[in-house]
Image 1 (cartoon, one colour):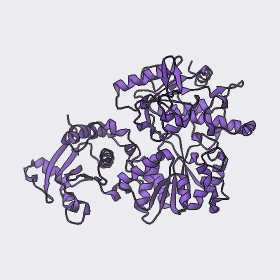
Image 2 (tube, rainbow, N blue to C red):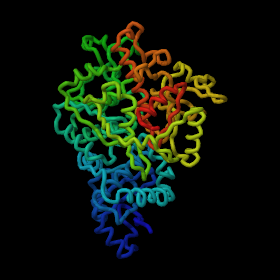
Image 3 (cartoon, helix red, strand yellow):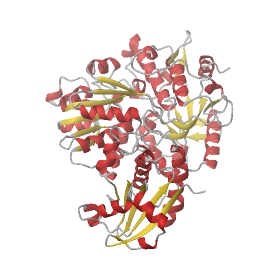
Image 4 (cartoon, rainbow, N blue to C red):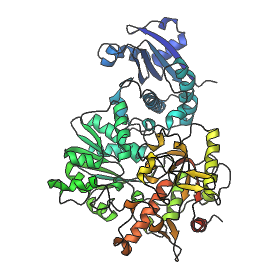
Length: 585
């Protein structure tokens, strides 16, 4: 049975011309019931999405002459949706979902085609969050999904037939108007109301640091109308970040979305600087692209030792998204430098895991997986005892022993490339909307210029020959004919969500005579990822290099939403190490 009803109404000159034809029950609902409504116009195609408890009164307010959006829009239809599930929390949730999905669907049409009451929606995400409420799963599966696929798509109001196709897009994943958790909402409210305090937001992979960033920017634009906001992102996210704010109508002249090098070079001052992936910020160091060090040639910054130090001079308030376990090269700001520069910052931890979905019906959770991977990689490093990362040693090891076909985690002991390819291909046959990839540590030689020549291969197993990712920027959406077959490196997937992931563990990570994991620079192929030969003679630097290798695998092993499989690339020793550490056998 249907769990929602839709009333279609025609509009002419702001009047609902067929209202009298509706039944008494429908007219009563239009006057008195909780509802979601969508106005639609075809010249040009445009929608307005909102919620109300008195639709007829709300319609009159829209067309009273005071709302510019409705004065200029040529809406000729409106649908009003009712459901037995529509309590207040559900209305907030459904409204934000529909705005997000419509925005992603309409992204290639002219700007400002999806409109909504921005003040009301953005302010709601700054603290009044409703991450969970009774019946939320029913709302998603029995209202939003069928509404999109059996009502909106057949009417021609949307062009994407299934929501599964939209859910993987960056415009949906990082939408600045999606409903937040209580944890995220409370943190945004605190930051917005304390302009003089700086923050470090610590979070594991998949805990929503980037989502928090987009919401924080949207709320700051809305609540601090005079503030200049600088958003610092990694190069592979600069275009995406700018697009997100643009399509949601937040492309303000007060907002700049730039890499740290570009922001510093502009020498502009900001009221708020928000840094995504601050663990990857550069320090003064020789082995990196010259542009990173060029900023120290600016006289004002010549005495600085890192990009972070410079950003602190350019911003009145600084908010840093940080994960100590994702530092992957010597040129990144060191832990000691970061701790020193942020000694007086307020430290907060995000704890809710969003990326990883443990299969239904299992006794284990996504947190069990994250804690297990942390233990596997870092148990001998001392980092798990620090205040830099969350870690719970009491994780459920059954996750790593689950041998059922739908287990989240498993591994192949022979022909790793062959088995990973077959596993991902089989999933694609059942779930063609999935974005699946094989990823690997930097254990095979490569050159960035290789990406221009598809004939150059890097990974060989029997009659299988595969190449590294052809590009680091927006690789997931690459148009290469062999895009899905390429092996992804950490540089192409940091910050990216994938459905199912195969990971090749290479012999750049080895087990020493003491039974500890160590990085092997002889089998590690990234020129800027190692210290100089002289620096590697220092014990502390050899330890740091090992952490870089461990962090690369931590990033790769935390990309998968629906499942992960491991293959051991010339590295049986790691298989033995893993089985003992996680008590698999």
